Every structure is written in structure tokens, then in C-alpha cells.
Image (tube, rainbow, N blue to C red):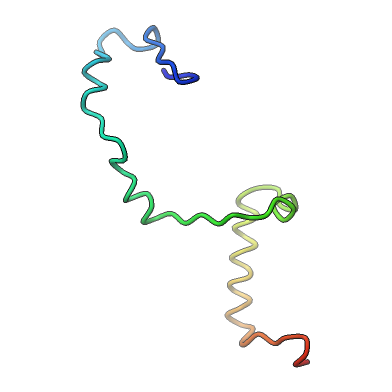
Length: 80
């Protein structure tokens, strides 16, 4: 186990060789795949505080997308 940047070798099962495990790792091996399927959107803290969970934020965003589909074009206040 790794806690606070230190590997606890006592938590490792005796049948595993730590040196062998650490030799085959590649840094960033899955980074490209992760970036291709992930988009992050930063939400301002005062807006984020209005939602109970990440799921609630996503639900609200989906609702906005659906409303845009049925709403047609956007109109500014000066056009009404």
C-alpha cells in the first residue's frame, strides 16, 4: 500500500516481489485514452454550492441541452 508517498512493504503479500512489480510500469500509459474520453468543466464555487452532488450538476446541464433543442434560437432582452 502507498500512503503519503511512502510504500508500506508490510502490507504487500509475501508472494509479490516489490522490485519486480515496479520495473514494468510505464508512466502515462493510459493517459491518451483517458483524455480522449474525458472532458472537464470548471464550475465557479458560488454556482457549485447550489448543487448537492456531481450528478445534480450533470442533470442540470443535460436539462439545459434539452431545453436548447426545443427552444429554437436565443433571443436577447432587447428583441422581446
